[in-house]
Image (cartoon, rainbow, N blue to C red):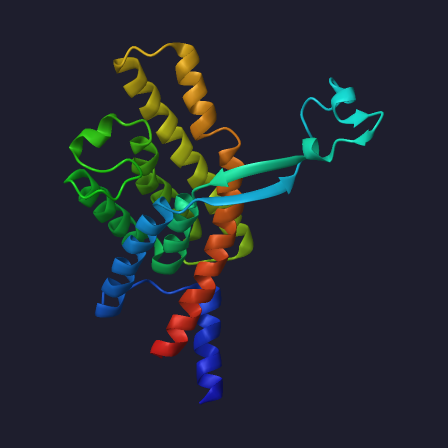
Length: 227
């Protein structure tokens, strides 16, 4: 009995399994949709050390006669973990059902449910942030195509790298399009891109890698319980 379970787990870890639509899959999709909504309205605040980009230009700002200005070597950041939540769902449900889950989330938001960061309704397509949300679908497609049931760490790195870039490229292109329709200046557009993307891409990649690894742990635990 133990050998049979061990063999099944080994198959699950190394080869993956195609997700099948069952009542359990439906429940996980509903829970995953709820997770996206929770992540949308969750704000994480953290501090981490950095090397200031102007360190060698403005040396005196960091090393003063009174000592080292340690605050200059710390970065305070507020982060909404929606993109890591998307990759967690990909790891949990695989490509097909994660895309269906995100599509359902977008449709619910567009028909009027206030589940986007700034509300909901069809007019949300004119919000700059909407195209980042829309980018989740192609991101899941490409990331899931890279994974193909093989959740090795290297594959996770590749999937996250490509997926996060797809989200931000789609978001930036959509934002430029809407900003152009609104006759915004190039300076304003550049500022929005820097705010919505910029360093955020690195945070998205870092936390999405953790989310995908965590998703595999949760998936394995669920698989063991259901077996």
